[in-house]
Length: 400
Image (cartoon, rainbow, N blue to C red; front, side):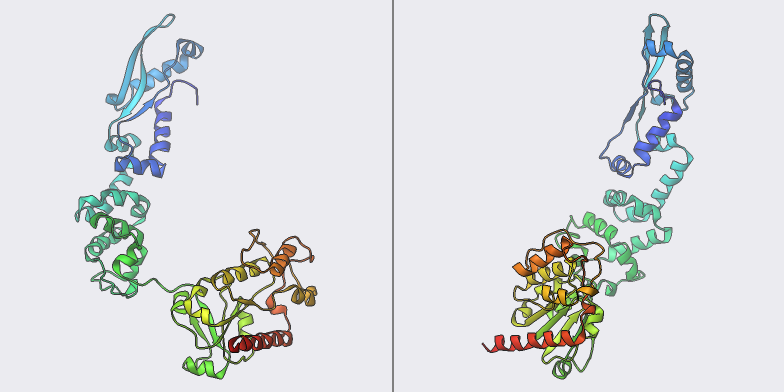
């Protein structure tokens, strides 16, 4: 590309790159945030530049004289001391989106017609939806024609509070499946904001506006470790509960044993008045439950930077959490079974004891050679003794 004399093909390519292929700029033009006219300077030459390449100067002027939209061009008559007078194109000005589409040619025209076809059923409901639709131009372009029709059937049915506390998939809709609503939830939320003065996604999002429950997430295994606890849980030996359910429903045992990994949870022995919650990894969000304040809580995880970080997060939520088998004595006892942690944490945990923090720092610094002892590598007989000691200490604490 020469530093002067922008020919038509290069000007069109640059406009396409800046205004059509750039999603944010395109949305801005369509929404009116970047208003027309669009003006592009054509880098008209000085006389010295023209004299240095007369053939390019001739082609530059000839190319724009043949431009198929002459009304878009701005010309200036320039007097050059050595070249005489010439009408020189100095700028290209595009006045509207239809002009831009026509300039860019058949491919842009096909794309523009697709937008119109997809948006038309929704704009027939309310023209105020235009900007919200343009905000989601990528979704509109990927949408099947049938989906555009379904959206137009779905949108008028959505009303504040219609979920009545049920899940989103249980919405009482006609002719529209609720998986469709879930797939287009973000777009629907913005469209409803246009119709309901911005209240559909604020302050509690679309689910709150519809009065729908969030889908369960953050699943954990729950295993009663004694007959009494199993009986209180309808005799079930193993349950899977999501984070919110665990927050809201107290487990019927005095001792709650939180275990990082699934397999270690399956390997736990029978323990009196104890329920284990395990397999959540770093999911400690449920531990801000109020009912845990009245329980004895033990936490057992891997001895590595991640495991100690999870312990810190658990203790941040429940300061009385007691770490089990996550000390230097346990590490040294099974040092030959250590491996390397793939991605050690560099952030320093905030809620460890001084001894635990020292262990974290030594692991991080490679003091032990390797950086991880998996909880599965601790011998069952040793684990049993430590767990029984925890129960005994906890009983004394309860009685004191």
